[in-house]
Amino acid sequence: MANLGFVGLGVMGSRMAKRLLDAGHGVTGYNRTKSKAQWLLDAGMQWADTPRAAAESSEAVFSMIANNSALRAVTEGNDGIVAGLSAGKIYVEMSTVSPAAIRELAKQVETKGAEMLDAPVSGSSITLAEGKLSFMVGGKREVFEKVLPYLQAIGPKATYVGGHGLAAAMKVATNLSLAVQMLAFSEGLLLAEKSGIARATAVEVLLNSVIASPMVKYRGPFVLKMPDEALFDVNMMQKDLLLALEMGRQLDVPLPTTSITNEFLTAARGMGLAEKDFAIVFEVLAKMAGVK
Image (cartoon, rainbow, N blue to C red; front, side, top):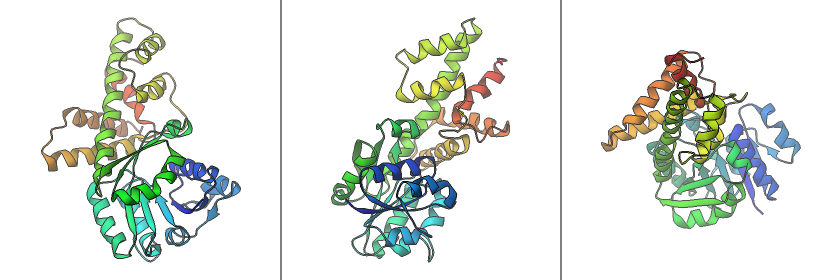
């Protein structure tokens, strides 16, 4: 059993930290809003007043935050994660951020004599609860082997993909398909509905057809009833699509369906739906189709 740190106890991070606790590890956590982590403190997690303190108290520290700017906020400065690292420690960054940000951060970590991995996840709070979350991991393979037992306490599958930043690139390449699939699902559903097929019936058929990916199976039903709490809201999804489009320009890879889907997310934001799960693109398309 290890002493682990965890920075960023939001919807995903908190549930990951709980799985580490359940596996018997000691966890010291930090979150910008302490009250949101109270249930973890009640479950045995120790509290760190700063990201630095979480890193100092642990053999390996994990972070799961929103974007590049949030990553800088928890890693830089006297109270940041990097300041709390020293020789022999490992920092595992699990957020969806740009590959360039990961590579720059890895350089900073190495100046402390510590090691870093980027280990973003594929899945949501639902797949995490089902024990089906998977990781893609970048960095040194020998460091990956050291932290593999901790990752497998969170999710069963972890794939080593190469050097620093390559896991972040793989995650962006993966996530663009989530929104594109949701828009395509919405198109087919609305075509069926306007043909005279009841929406619930069309959803049932689609979810039992060859197009029913794992994401479509758990998010497709949202078109019948949106969840009270977004699994992944419009702003978060659009952040990932913008990362993909930036990479596409840099690497000369055209991303036509990503570009179109991004505009539907912009439309959702314009309609005041930014805090809804990104499945709300169905509602955007439905209004354009004249469907209530």
